[in-house]
Image 1 (cartoon, rainbow, N blue to C red):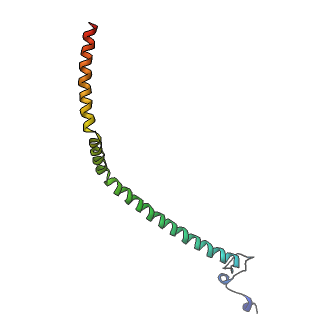
Image 2 (cartoon, one colour):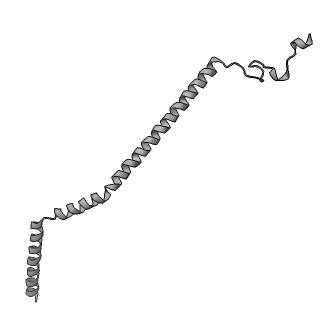
Image 3 (cartoon, rainbow, N blue to C red):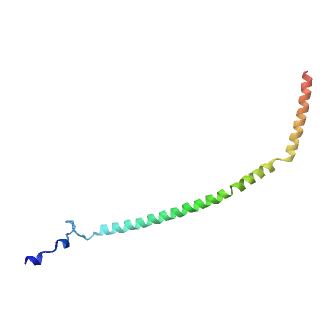
Length: 110
């Protein structure tokens, strides 16, 4: 009769109070594992989307940097065209007139 109740040492399984062998999980533990798995998948999805966004932003910045020399050229063109030719001519006339007046003032002083 002793042989009918004895089990091999490796096949013994105890309930949650013991520690050897797989114990059946409670409903809470099952739900927790399911939710943790869903959260892990969601975080992985968020990480993938952030990486895609980062690559897109890098591409946009690269395209913007390609236009830098063009922008500099247009700025230079704008600065040249912004100089009013009439104002430049008047400025030259004023300089000549100021030069003549200065000469007269210096003659008056002597």
